[in-house]
Image (cartoon, rainbow, N blue to C red):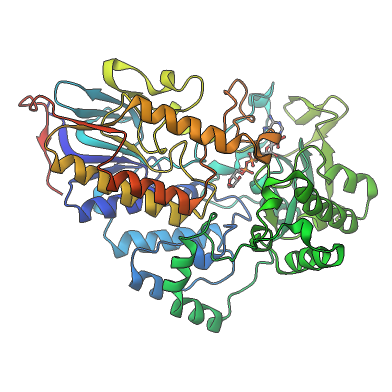
Length: 546
Ligand code: NA7
């Protein structure tokens, strides 16, 4: 049976896959998207855990490509919750009629580059096969759940959930003893919400983290109106900054402020919430002495908030600089530990020994539980790639090529894997910059590279090994002197046993990344090889229209 043929296959219908589809349609390409979930949304489809919320201000967490779309959507609050973001993405899918080219509930299991005709042969989990000239991965940076390999996990008789595979129906915590393992971005969002409902909540914490108040609130209509009136100006500003947010960085060091000025600045930050105030001073993220001032401010706030001094001490981060692990924002996270029905268990000092049929056994104690929640994060950047058998020239597996850490040119292309493009791939500026803005840039650039390849004929476009090496070195050199190297974080792969320790994210910032990609495109796609291949063998694929 002949496999259907498309110009392009996109894997994933999250924020990036959806826009990639729209963009390729604009270029006139026949495109098919495969999505494992039952609907659009990616991260926002899967992460339905209680308290799930964006930690970017809503008015900046949206597509910018369509002026009318920006005007017609009203966000209800400062940080939209999961359901609201999913509704927005569903609206986008309707608005641009995306679903007709998306096949849901279908997981891509493998993709092999066929050198005979320069196409990708793609396999999906229902046994289907399709071919396409271009393969685009829109897998998300944090989509492969990391489930800890704790002895006895399968023995637990109660219910257990990973936060990123939360059931569609709500989970009832009333009269339940609940254990949460993990206190990253997800844990700090879920913990206060679960604590308000559960009979008792036990939090199993391995690393104490810095977290600042989100100060989530409803959005005033006038503020929304003002933002909509100024959107063009706001996006133009975002595109010139490192983080992709509309801020004016200070040319000063935070250390140049007097003690009183710095205190006032940090107090304003705490009162207003979020991260904007710490983005103003670059050196907080770069210089340990500057960083210590912010870190110590947060430590003092934790001690002042948490009434029990022993619990406060356990919650106080001590082993990594502020921001070297993903900084967190929360709603009443530290206050939650003042509740009588919440117990913090420090598993750094008394690790989990095993999961039993009735709860969690640490080396010190046994905790009887009805529900266990794994808020244990993701195999970031490469995990989702490793779950697909992607093979390039000579049948080489991407997983094998990346066995010592991912290698890619601009985070978009891989030498030896022609006509494969990655949105938010390792070595790009994602996910450290304003995500929707960043991925729009990626998709636009990839659409341009594909158009360039098409103008050159029926052949392949492929990263050159030298260009890839130079980019990987550049990304490493940017990361090495930074505070990011001083934490056991998912950024470095430290949360996944056996994963090579590498920082696969471009730290030059959104504006510099875009400039670099644009320069490469303007120079005729420097570092890419465009080649002609043999004509397609007849009968290997049926061309599909639309
Ligand atoms: P994170 O930020 O990776 O947090 C995972 C948490 O789970 C963190 O506290 C980990 O402790 C803990 N963890 C992971 N494995 C274990 C084991 N084996 N035992 C005990 N505790 C463990 O994931 P999130 O889902 O919170 O957030 C991911 C990103 O999503 C976030 O950065 C945002 O970008 C959105 P650790 O710190 O490793 O000691």
